[in-house]
Length: 266
Image 1 (cartoon, rainbow, N blue to C red):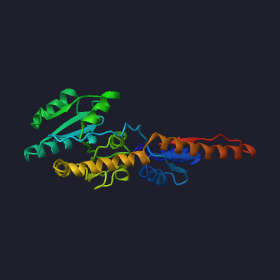
Image 2 (cartoon, one colour):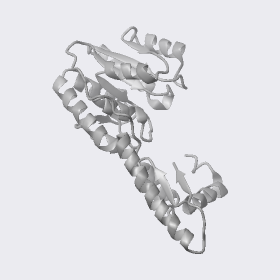
Image 3 (tube, one colour):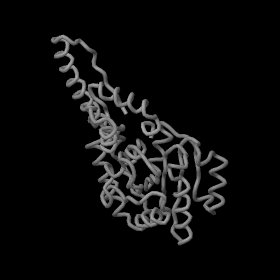
């Protein structure tokens, strides 16, 4: 979006800078493709985000309601209104769910605005907004939840989604940005189109009565987090990148150019 809005000379400058970098780091294949399309001469490498892995200890609850968690800045493009509408649809069908929204206030509302939106849909007290969370408080909400929901209209590779996988939570998310690179529908969770509250409600509803499916998806998500999104994997990827660049620098310094190595990230 920034590139598209930068004008002719701005876009030329971006392409020039990206082409001069020894490596341009993209956080997903989706971003790598976009960068390569905008700057074909850029040397793009994918190094995915990573999260700390909590102890692999998740207790299965056998009580209702099903607990839903969304963790994000409360911006409209994160699909907050879609999720509230989806939960209202489920409640109207007699499906018992509880929703916690957590994260800083944004364009979708603050504490008062979101409380009003929850009341207007008749969701109080089964839905609540708890504001920004971090550290042990954030970990508490991940442990509390049964399902993590990410209803964004567009995305990169959201950290909260990776954290949810690490906590062994099944995912219901929109198939936008790099999310389909992470979640395979039917394996770690269920993917739906963006801006479709009824599809969101249908996917959540499919998990409400199927504890076995939730368990299998959560287990697959944890396994994926361990394999692809651990800090150990990130350290290995960065070490490999810097080793490659160090070798290139040695070759430069033994030649005639002596130019510094430049790394760009996106």
